[in-house]
Amino acid sequence: MNFFKNKITLIISLIVLIVNVIFLFGYSFIGFGTQRYSFAFFEVSQAFYQTYAPIATGVHIILALTGLVIFIISLVFLLKK
Image (cartoon, rainbow, N blue to C red; front, side, top):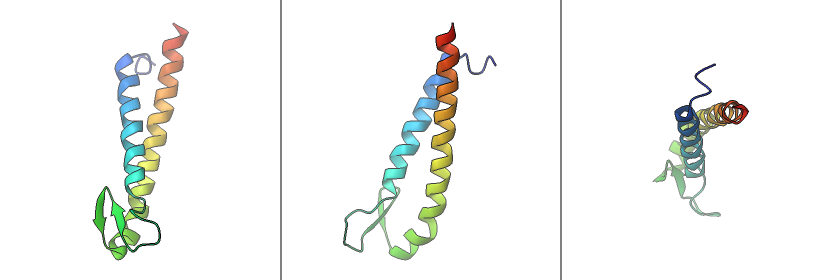
């Protein structure tokens, strides 16, 4: 449980959460109604986007949720002091 009582854990989990949420926005459309697709902030073809974006989105959702859970647990332990 000392892992969650560390302020460094709190900061790192917050950074992980923020970075993964930013990347989730990077997998969205560049423009609505156009055939331009964004993958990690780079414009790619529709075939590439349809193949790899769901996988990458799932990975970033899992990482963001993990960062959020660790952040909340660390915050609770630090506020209990």
